[in-house]
Length: 494
Image (cartoon, rainbow, N blue to C red):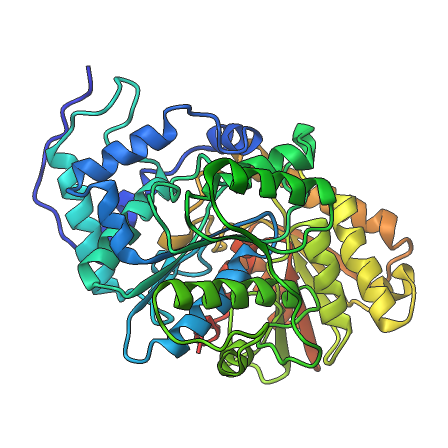
């Protein structure tokens, strides 16, 4: 028997919405189990999501009104979403373009954007309580094991659907959370177009998953009669599986061509050319299916300006400190071997080059492998070796993702998924420090292991002279640094 939930008078404020939303977070053990299952842990997942949709007053076909561009992949799906949104927005003058992505950096409402801007606190709270109270009013769940309120990401997906439908968006760029087939976003019956970015094993290699299994999961977003796009893929086996997934459901399959040489992109890094190429293909198919005029070339001329104007906060981003003109922040949420290689190429491929590092990664990840990927790529870009590159740092700081020195998170940054035992012992941070010692023997600077992001920022600000600080290893870390260091202006996609 489900417990009776008593409706009580409550303030319908943004802060109260965030407090309630955080009660939907899963703990560390549950998150890890879902990750290891590739999103397949709950065989009732899609059925439950459809039932939640019904309980808030919608049918699946209602979601077709959102005119969805559905995007998944192992690497680059967020950047692809940003490029796609910017192109489509440029072509639908006066329209409303919804963008749903994850995770957020400083505020949950960043995940739900219209024309590049996050929902306002008032709008977020309004739509949040409309969804929450509809679920509260209809507590009959599909199984006795189904919670009355969905877990965090599912709730936000429902909230995004409700907000976009209420606001009457003309198009929606919808980024998958985990996997594809079993993801909570995969309940739109007929998107306008679907796409798969680069596939890889970085997130799932510990599971023993093959590229074929990963591709099968990602290809689960392909729908009958809906254009099914993919980037070329490094492994032929993955591309073959995606093609088979499309054939199985009757979706016209297409591998997007590369961008012409010399095209300017607003996002740094050579890997962004692949993401931008997929975005171009998705935007072209979207406009064609929607009956809008578009130049039938590999890169329509009208797409060049929006590609150059695309911004995606926290990815290869430089921001000047607003309180200390001597500090430049180099922000990149890279957290896989491949993305950290790209981060190293970017951070040491230009100026200023880092003199301090703030780094963290999720528990259980391979500390030495990740740090080595960053340093080796940086060394290559700088024309030196790993030891010499590492020796250039004055401060190397390994911190948790806890926001403040008093041990609390900012409400929007609360993370129930952190293992409390790991956190208390600073186990991940100590492992990172040990790994640094092996990678940069005889390091002459200072290595700090600290319990919060605010501690890390304080160490940087206590320094002297010009400082370029690289923040990497976790998007949650980057968001926390932006919050504590007062870099919220860097959150804009404009």
